Image 1: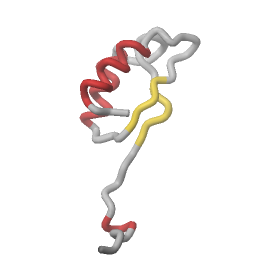
Image 2: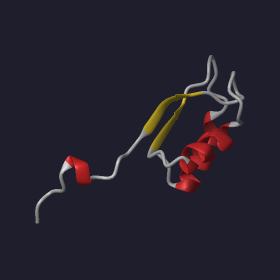
Image 3: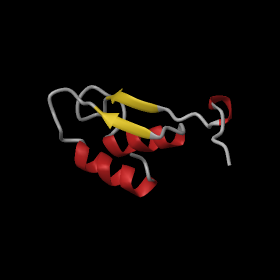
Image 4: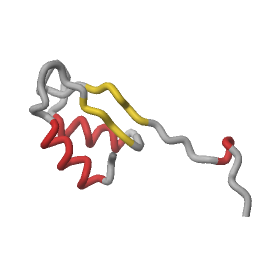
Length: 68
């Protein structure tokens, strides 16, 4: 069996810079994760300014949706 060509592979996208209402974003952490999942992203990084407060809620939401 041969590996599929790049053109035949499904695209995987990640967002490595997103903010939630824990800093200056417009969605709470769990909703930001849900929006990333709904958009078909394979992974998501919550990068709020000066705080890690949104990480626990984001992690719970990501785990429940299978998002890395």
